[in-house]
Image 1 (cartoon, rainbow, N blue to C red):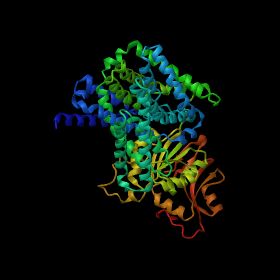
Image 2: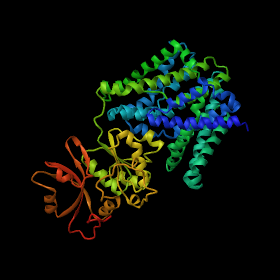
Image 3: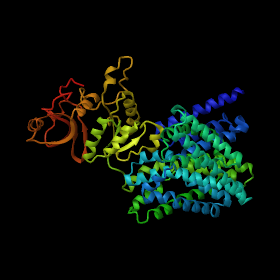
Length: 604
C-alpha cells in the first residue's frame, strides 16, 4: 500500500473532524469550515490533490458517500410530519418546491445562459436548504416561534424531497435525452430495488431476526448492497434506489428505526466531514470568481424566486408581511447541494455534457453567498422586522423521570414552555402522557443539533439519574443559554465521587436548589405522596402561616416573579430576605402522613 495514501486519508479525517469541532465552537454551519479547510488543503497550498491521490477510486468513494447521506436523509422524511406542521410547510415542500425549481431553472437558462438540461439539474439542487445550515441560523436569529417552526420543518423535510428531484433529473440527463425507454428502465430499476431493499430490511427488523448489536452494521451493509445491486441492474440507478429505500423504511409501521437513524446520523457526520474536505480540495476559488456576471445573475434569480414561493405558500395563512419577509430571506443552501452537485458534475463530464464543469462552481458560489450573507444579517433582519422573541424563559429538562416530570408539569401549569429530553422510551412515553412536550433522544447528540427545537427555551435543568450526563449537558448548553442559566440536580453519584473522580471546579455546573436537596430526596418524597404545588405568599401570609394553616411541610424550589421571571431557590435564607407578595413552586407533604421519607433535612 502506498504510504502517501494512508497519510492523506489520515489528514483528511483529522481536518474533517477538526472542521466539525470548529463549526460547533464558532456556532457556524459546518459546511463553511469544511469547505474552507478543503480549499486551503487543496488549490490554496497544493497539499491535497484528490484526483491524483485517489485516482480511479475517487468516483466510487464519493458515490458511496453521497448514497449513504441520501439514505439517511430519506429516513428523516416522515409523511405524518408533512401533514402535521401546517399548510405553509406542506405548501413549501410540495408544489412550492416544484414551482421554485421551475422558476430557478427558467432564470438560470434565459437570464444567465445555462443550457436547458444543466439549468434544470442546477435548479433541482438549489431548492434544498437542510437542517445543517438552518439550525445554526435559527439559534442565532432567535425569531418568534411561528417563523422558526416553518423554517425548521422546511429544512428537515425539503432535504429528501430536493434530493429525490435532483436524482430524477440526473437520471433523465444521463438516459432520457437519448432514450425515454432507457430513462424508464433506470427509474424502474431504482424504484424496484428501493422497494425490495426497504421491504426486506423492514421484515428483518420487524421479526427481530438479528441481535440488537448487529442492526446498525447490517443496515449499512444492506444499503451498500442495494446501491451496488441497483447500479448493476441499470447503470446510475443506485442513488434513486437508496433514496426511495430510506423514505419507505422511515415510514414503515412497527419498524423501530430510531437506533438505526442515530447510527446513520453519526456515520453521516463522519462521511460529510471526509467528503467535503475532499470535494473542497477539488474546487478552485478562481473558478468560482470566474462565474462573474453569470454567477451574480443566478444568485439574484434564486433570491428573487424565494419571496414568490413564500408569498404564494402563505396565502390565507394569517401570516403578517413581516413574517413572510423573514421566511423569504432565510434559505441558505447546504450539504446536499454541495455533495450531490460535485458527484453529478463528475459523471456528466465523463458523459460529455456541455456546461457540467460550471455546475460545481455555481453551486458553491450560491452556498457560500447564502450562508455567509444570511448568517451575518439574519439576527439584524429579525430585530428590524420586530420578530425577535422576548427573553426566553422556557426550560429544557435533561431526564424524563418522575422528578423531572413533576417539576416540568408544575412549571408548565404556570405558563412556562417546558420540554423534557431522554433516551428512555418508557420515560418519554410517561412524560407525553402527562401532557409535556418531549424530545426522544440524547440532547447532546448530533441528532439534537438538527432536530431539538429550542425556540422560547433559555434554561437547562439537568435532572437525570446520571451525574456525568447532567454535567455534559450543562457544558454543551452553557455557551448557548449562559453559564448562570444551566443547573444540575445533585444525586447519589455526586456524593460517591472521590477526589480522583470528582469533576474539576471549572466544569462543575451550578447546582439546582440548596445543598441538602438531592434527586433521591425529591424522588422519595414524591413516591410517598408529596406534590409539587404553587402557593402565594404576602405581607400578611407567610410561609409559616401556610404550613400551620394546611398542616404541611414543604421544600421551596422556585420563586415566580413579575413578567414570569423565574428564580431557582439555592439560598437557604432567600425567603427570609424576600418581602412582599410572591409565588413559590414547592414540594409539599402533609404533617400527618406516616412513612414519608425525607422529612428531616438529612434524609435522602
